Length: 315
Length: 214
Image (tube, rainbow over all chains, first blue to last red; front, side, top):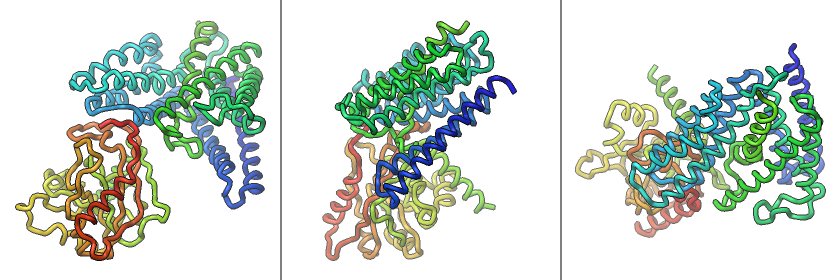
């Protein structure tokens, strides 16, 4: 067995251990406090844990399937996230072909470019080509009503849901000396640290949270939850150095950066939700809301993580 | 063999509708009537009845028949296959001078045979900026002919953005289908008051405009 797959197995065993523990705690809490299913917080907690099982298993299957599995999984995530996002933006009939192009051309092309490992065009396809061509498609219909808002919102949707999200599987294309064939573990590191940071912020907030950190944006986020979550996720990131090409200190520093990006990304996406008068992006994931509700912190941290690793570690 | 093909086509249409729209149904607290009833919905797209049909629980779905314009659904062999064979639509002639049968009689006969109806009382697809066009009187005459029938308002949200009139490529957007509480024709209720009440009940289900598009 290669080092990569034995590390992956250890990691999966660890994650399953955490989930089994979480499920057990959820079960005990439900038996004690909500035997008739009346406590909404505990029902939501258990729905979330159940959804985590499904998400972990899906990611696991994608990892086993290799590069193509990871690309298909994140391609699907981009598609579903874009669908949630575009549902909430200003569009008019004149945008029909531009939107069709976003879903049926931009998403597949972006992930195809990863498959073909065409980094140059991958990194500018949406910021340059989609940015210029999408408004051209829209303008041909001659509808000027709220034109700037419409084209700006579509571009923002593409940047967040496709461009940024695709930087997670883009980690597979990095060529890091001494780390051959193990890149999938970089994805695991990024996703585990960012998601654990979200979970730990929630847990610390529930346990100790007193001071609201951004009452206007996200009333449930607290200073105590933020500090506790970031510190513990950073330490977990440092402790996961053995799956990365980093030293423990470097792993901790990167974990710190991506948890911060994840936190502020969550705030930005909350502000958009408030602006549009909704609580969740959708209903795709039971207990969590929409896919973007789960992915918001990952999409904000992925490109930064990708570029730091690419600049300092890859050839 | 034909039954198998129509079932397969129906299943494929349901899967496609769900894949594009990730459609979610919102039910009334009391649930849906289990006996045959009339679902009446806002109409902005040819896909409207497909979406209502898709979210209905299988048992209710099997007895539901959309009421649709004959001239569209008999236009081509494909339309005819989907309209008559797959969805078993009650096809009515919209233009008075083309009618050989009275639409209300046709609908009442379908109800008598144990079917539910999916009805679009606006009569045509709404292309205007108004959320709802004034109802045609057909729903009143049907309710008067079968006063015991329950009428369930159904608001279909966002499908007009998925597939606006004249477009052929659907855009994936999340749609919701909201069912309201069942209503009935009140004794001695006049036509205009009844239509007004039905329109208000349906509009009450519409969410605040999210994308606030067209």
